[in-house]
Length: 138
Image (cartoon, rainbow, N blue to C red; front, side, top):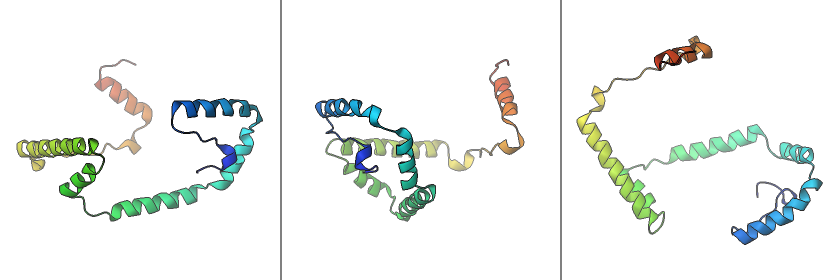
């Protein structure tokens, strides 16, 4: 559905269907002009359009406000009869682990890691510093 019908060959998602589709597609390879396909795809899509669509998706994602633990468990639970329960258990374990770590190492006692000024240092200089730090010789 992303490409026009003449650019793809669909198959059922099973071994026999995939084998049939590959067997049908191999003889078509010599007939395909990749440069023509490239020009067609280039005319169908643009970075501006793609970036606008991505922006809409991100805006919708940011509009979801209910990120409470109960709401997340509800979403996980709906992932299937077995997987949903497993996901809920994993989320519960991670939540309790997070609370345990916060109890023993409170957030306010953790030093903030400052950003390294990469714009002032060349890539070669960064490599040299990392090599020296890890005991590697150049």
